[in-house]
Length: 198
Image (cartoon, rainbow, N blue to C red; front, top):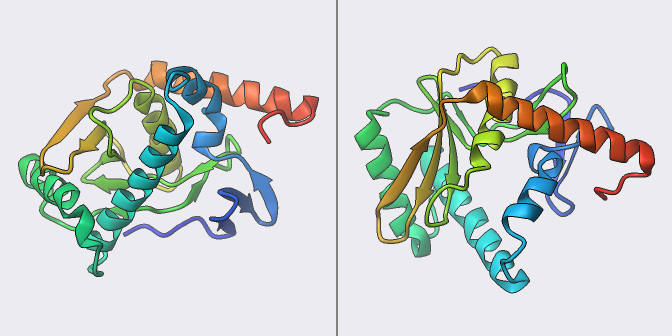
């Protein structure tokens, strides 16, 4: 399993990263304008509930993969994860699971959910993966390649509490990475204006 980037720290209270003491934007921070657009009609309390559930599902999958106990309240999502692994033939341990990485070339960081046999997977607890998951996965693929991991496929995976899942392949990585680079350019411009992303 690959290790997190040395010198990269994460403050979970503020959901803030720093590389060697200097604040750096995460993939989700850079993509904030896209999230704001896609989820603009979702009421705040519903969005908070979905975020809480998503965090719990991620923790459950991570704990399972690392051989730790997990919250039984999310066992349906875990059954969906196990079914996905079985159906896709991922029988070995993941190359990476919730591994924090920093891009020295582009100056951003992120935590890809998991990688199996060159496939980077982003786990969601929604009905289906959002179209912007493709952009998120392009950024994660960039981070992983910088860390020396070969990536040939990106999959958005929506786990459901009834033990089923919806998987979506995103083949157009070049276009998706161009969108991420555009978001990163806007983020850098806003930083110069006084950090409207704060």
